[in-house]
Image (tube, rainbow, N blue to C red; front, side, top):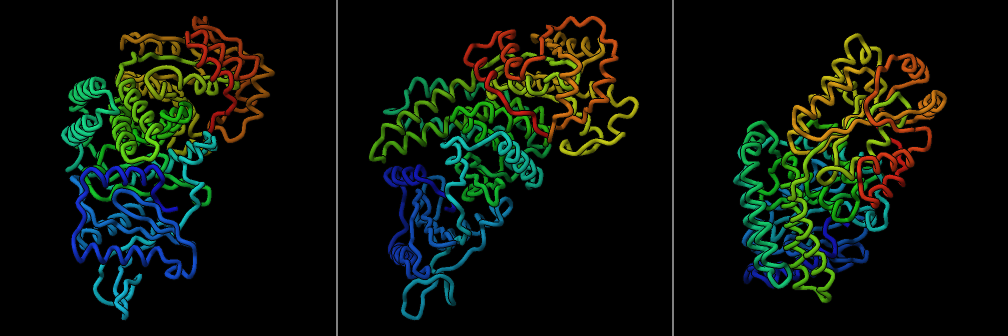
Length: 548
């Protein structure tokens, strides 16, 4: 498949009923003939044809190809009513999507009249319409379908974060777009759309959400404007949810970026990823949402932008709420869409609720399980999708100018480097806390002054602090580091033996026996920090080793 899913098709049915203006006369007749030609297996060498309809396009799936025809419609936010406008939209779709999925998006192809007066793909003469030609891919490899069958693992989430971070890094900065006013337009559109669906979406809840969102937007406006000037508004994707991500040759690829309104595509990068994070949260993939955010921030270093995340998450959930309500209006069985719309509205309200940040430091010698415990804990403390984990091993390699997945050389452990690493960790923690988010600092913290300094960050910013020290026998520490594969840490058995000779001084942090398995230790930590039993049970099931 090359784009649309059943939900989008249902959305098209509802949208058709609420105000699309079809192109008239000759253009509409030509579209009917073009649709008939594309639906005919003879056009595709006899291959069976399947159609997927949305409110603005029809995708014809045949053999190894997918052909996307823009429908001759006009909405308040979209105008495909002329051949020229459809050509421009097709070209924009190719241009935007070849940045991330060149294997899928092949070309813009004209539809012309053949000698018999019938439409055909390609050919000479004036174009009567335009198509996007795509390579068809396996619909079962779209991430929303993989999520439905539980086949999205944390390794895939990390690869996806790498892909999105690289895409954002290369995307064109657009300081002429975005900012507070652009976000306000989205909020106002959401408010009108929710009001139009009062039969499904509780008006009081929708109005309360709009009031809270506008207040959050006013508070965020200076940051939004600063980020616009600093280059964080980029020509991004605009519709970055699981249904618009597929695996091609096992690697994630973004497709179906918004092409019809640059104001919805040239946006703050945090607002772009907010759709994906919200989608994972709405599906109860909490650990996956947390891991995506951790990895994305590791790759981009965009700590200050985290302050915008609650606003972005809530706005994306509000969009899904009114879209789901519109789908219900045109569905044969509206009940599941009504339930979805109400869940999204509830989620949008909850995502804006302020959760006070806190700082947790996890210390212990190499092999004590710090990173596993930190990552098991992270999704369950702080505002959704949980705490951000800051790892000393990642910071060390960034300071040394190497990729976290690479093994560090002597330069990463030169004299004075450890002091720089801990100073950078504390600075990053302060930035994350100032953004209103909980942070977990994962580092050895062997020296008393290192432990005191990270605790001082919390006191200075007036947030609660919890220090945890993981204890394990020497033999267990050595065995664990020797067993590691694909981990960002470069610790070896010799390094552990050196650490065992450290003078730790008095350790005032809560000491946790870490000789047992990581799941048991994580559950113990969860209870020490007062998490509810559901979170503790999830932590007890955590088996994944930290990745690079």
